[in-house]
Amino acid sequence: MAELTATVITYNEEENIRQCLESLAWVKEIVVVDSGSRDRTTEICRAFTDKVVINPWPGHFEQKNYAVSLASHDWILSIDADERVPEELRQAIEREMSAPRHDGYWISRRNYFLGRWMKHGGWYPDRVLRLFDRRKGRFGGVNPHDRVMIRDGSVGLIRGYLNHLTYNDFSQYIRKQNWYTGISAVEQVKRGRRPGSITAGELVLRPLAKFVQAYVLKGGFLDGFHGLIAAVGASYFNFIKYAKVWEQGLQGELVPGPGKPWRPHR
Image (spheres, rainbow, N blue to C red):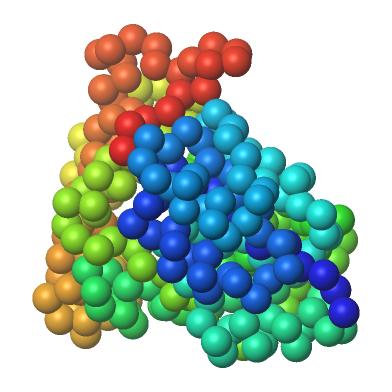
């Protein structure tokens, strides 16, 4: 039987974290890394685990790798504060951990938008690799889109679904997307994208293409008014992402120097 550690990163998640950790109560060890919450997040976490560590925000995948490094066990289940592990998934994970056949596992997510499970528009099944052996894998990617990369190993698909409560209301949706687009814009500039290279076509055509893809090609219209709002929102925040890259040319260099990680407000 492979021992398992669940890792969670947090920041001002008092509304989410209790239900998240309750869904992980069956895991032998839980590690929480908080980046300086100003609410009751860490207080709530300490009711579930004594491994609650404060670490200044270095970036999405950097923080997740730090959490993994604190685990006592090699097998990691990485969960976000707005995710829940239902009973069916718990049982599937425990079966696999009795004799792991792979070095990592994809888990399908059920994404909920404003209270509705979104089955179309690119929202489902949304497979994420969150169960893995840290000796073979670690987080990488481009912030804010982290992903686990497995080295010299095999990856399977586990049965069951991870429930992802993305946005409870529209204010939260706008707040989080503002945060994500800020990170994305800074990452693009750090990787060599010049603010002056943003074209009118990108600001107009990319958002339009995003809407057509989500609402028409991927069947977002089948999710009713929720699907329409989600597709329009995806289009709008695609525009905002590139507009923020362009904006950096007006404001001067926003990318921080060494030792000063940029952290957007949320």
